[in-house]
Each structure stands twice: as C-alpha cells, then as structure tokens.
Image (cartoon, rainbow over the protein chains, first blue to last red):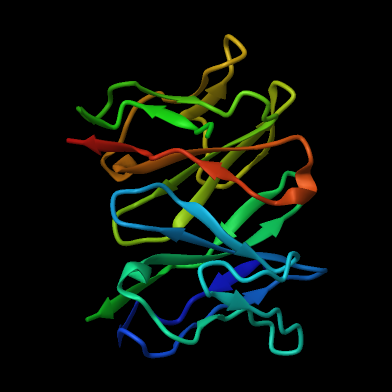
Length: 109
Length: 115
C-alpha cells in the first residue's frame, strides 16, 4: 500500500535551533517525494521536491531509499518557518499526491 | 503570478442539500484534482480529471460526488446529497501538462459545513 507517515503532529523549537521533520513512506517503485508547506491562512504550496535536490528557505530533504525516509531539515530555525508541513508522495499515472498527516512546526522566539 | 481560485470560501448547508464547489485552475494546466481535509485529519485525494474525464478516483469519491468542467475554465465538484461527515475543507489543485514536474498548485480551499 502507498502511504506517507509523519510521526510528529507538533514540533516546537526555539529560534536558531536545528529542525528535523520526519517523513517515512511506503511505495512499490521509484518514489517521487515532496514537501508542501501551509503558512497561516495561506494555501498549500510546494516547498521542495527530492528530484531537484535543492535547498529552499534553508530547508533540505534527502531521499533515503534504504530507510524509506524523506526527512526535512534546517540547521537554524526562524520564526517565519512556523507553519504546517506536509510530506507527499506522487503516485500513479495521474500524478496525484498522497499526503502524510502533517506536522505543525512552531518556532519560538 | 497565476493562482488557482476557489469559490465559495465558506458554505454552510443543511444535510441532504446539494452543494457545488467551484474552482478556476491555472489557465494552461491540464490536470485537475479535488482533495478534502476533515478538521484535524490529513489531506485526502478525492479525484483527478484529465481530458474531460475522471482519470482516477478514491474510495471516498462515491456516487454522491461528481466533477465536471462545463465551460473549459471552471472545474466543479458537486455533492448531491450532503451528509454531516462531508463537512471539511475542499481543495482544488491543478498541474501543467508535463506530469513529470510533479508540482500541484492548490487553491485556498472551500470550507463546507453541513448542519
């Protein structure tokens, strides 16, 4: 079964602390994985995708096929990073996304 | 920057009533999707639409749901006879032609409250 798991509902850190939002997936085949972010009162938007191997707003994520993980990391959290973060897996020919449950990141001053 | 737009932003309806949620995808996009998010739960896939037909639907998307693109711009989700459990945020999304780019562009959502 295709599934995305984000084990933490809430992650609370202080400004300047490192952040790691966990994501594990289950998929038979070559996965395409994404991180989407939803800031307060805004729409879901793409943060980054594993295929491009880029760093956006200081965030990076590495696909680890052995551990079936795609954790999102940032070395120094900023208050403006506070948001809901969703890990997602692209599935099938229609390109639909399967989302994890989401993790709320709260960065305290 | 082009955006996916959804109307209404919030609709309150009585159980058993029909509801139509409207979406205007980004103009050069060819793949369209509806998702829903019940309060406190994950974002769930409902249906994908391409070339004027449903390309995939989830188990949630039963006979009370339908989608159409009547005029080449709007993409609508109709719930024929709403139930209390249909109360959720409904998100429309679209994707450009190249399915390998992977990015879905989402609307801001329509909140449906069924009383």
